[in-house]
Image 1: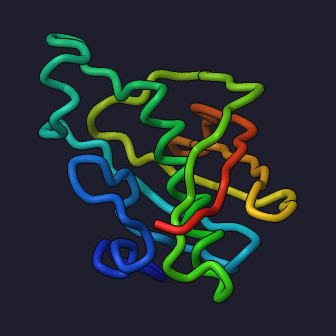
Image 2 (image 1 turned 90 degrees about the vertical axis):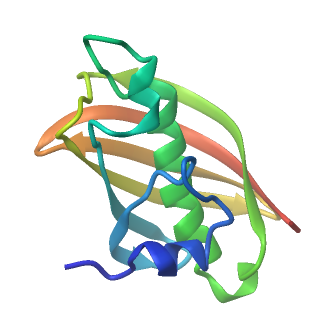
Length: 144
C-alpha cells in the first residue's frame, strides 16, 4: 500500500513521464526522509537503447530516482511547498548490482543537513534486500 500515488507525487515534483522515476511513496517524514518505489518495466523507453538484447536500467537514472525521492522529502516540508530542487552533486557513488526489467527499485533518501537553500542527503536503492546503488547527494532548493 502506498502513502502517495503517482498523481500525488506529481503534485509535489515538476517531473513528468518519461522522466519521473518514482511510482509510489511508501513512507514519508517531510523534511527528513522518504522511501519510494520505481517499477522497472520492460516497456520503459530507456531499454530501446540501453542495451538492446541485454536491458539494464542506467546507473545515472538510479541516481536521478534517488534525487527525486529526496526532493519529495524536501518539498513535502511546508516551507518548501512549490519550490524546485536542483541536483548539485553526487559523491561516494557505488553501483553494486544490475537493475533489470522486472525489478522493483526501493528508493531510500534521507536528508542529512541543510544550510540555507543547499543541502545534502544520503540515497540508497535496493532490489529486494540487495543494495543496488548508494550515494551522497548535494542539492539546492530554488524558486521554479
